[in-house]
Length: 195
Ligand SMILES: [Mn+2]
Image 1 (cartoon, rainbow, N blue to C red):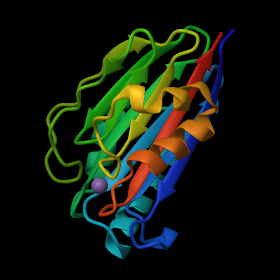
Image 2 (image 1 turned 30 degrees about the horizontal axis):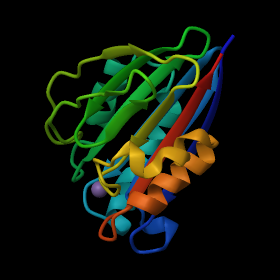
Image 3 (image 1 turned 120 degrees about the vertical axis):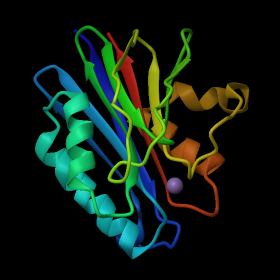
Image 4 (image 1 turned 30 degrees about the vertical axis):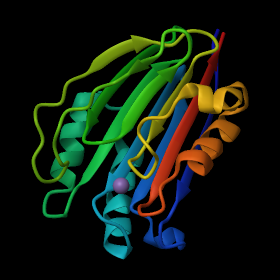
């Protein structure tokens, strides 16, 4: 039996949560954990409105197959300025992890088998390639992080060695604090897996 500790942080560039174009959702059900992170293009009230549309869609459809979900999200957001998003589902018992991503949301496994998923290029709601599902496995002690481009993409794990030994909450808020940029909304999900 595995268990997960997870946390989501959001920070609006303009301060007000109702002007944040980044959003995220984490849902556990049966032995599954669904995680989605969204960055609506631009920022401010219009980005927030689109992020809410995406959030509502994910809230209603998080049980779906990830490729279907990405296609559905694309249809749902047509006519808006669009978003980028990463969708993950893990099996808490086996550690099996599925990923589908379009656009610049960074998704990494931190641990002895460090791995970075490669998203497909595109803007969901505008033009996307055929979504493609990637599979990995989390092992006990691994941490999954997902973050938008409001957080520096590359950082040296040595600069934050202590960070990854804490709780999911301290990892997510620590990444935002240490590597958050000053010119965009920012969001981060951290998930720690133990068996
Ligand atoms: Mn952004």
